[in-house]
Image 1 (spheres, rainbow, N blue to C red):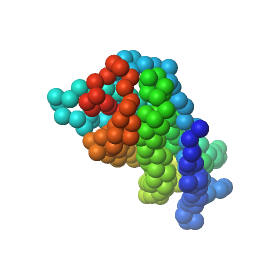
Image 2 (image 1 turned 30 degrees about the horizontal axis):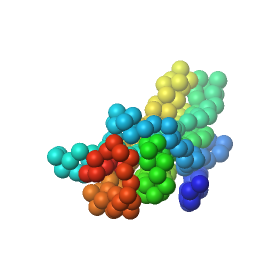
Image 3 (image 1 turned 180 degrees about the vertical axis):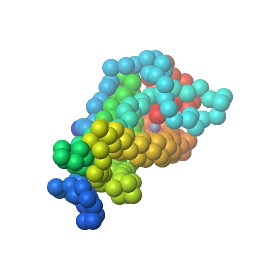
Image 4 (image 1 turned 60 degrees about the vertical axis):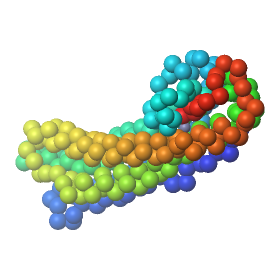
Length: 238
Ligand SMILES: [Zn+2]
């Protein structure tokens, strides 16, 4: 239906070897695998303009406070970051000691966007096109964010774990589980911090798409669009 830009960045794989002097050498270097994913865009034309006004829009309205604004469409969906960590270990029963190491860390960064367009807007071919073009700018911002942070997150996790070591031990076996828990938690914490930074950047860049200039230019593309119920001034897109 629309030109679909696939994500340009492929998966990122980092092989992280423990230092050779480590007493607990893992059998293989740790694998840090970052997988950016963009689901196909879904479309929802089922709601009319009145119904769309009840939905909350998370960018700041560029119009002045006296303007009457209406949401014509918006993009729904967030960027998710889900890590899964596999840790390997070996017990040395005679010594009562264990070695632990990162085996594989998979981090999936995904967007699953839905473009919601009011049924009245969808029925007007000119405004439908203009609004879709605008919403695609939001989708593209998210795709760029996913690509950018796929690179950043792989490096940050690598650096963070390198400081602490890709393997641990030998430690007394009764403490093995506590060490595994800490290794899992460390990955989550490293990712959480980047996730927060990513969301701030995403919000700023999505806000930049919703400029007054952009709204006015979309409005001017279809001067005859009149669904009857909305006033001419300041229709909101999001
Ligand atoms: Zn918008």
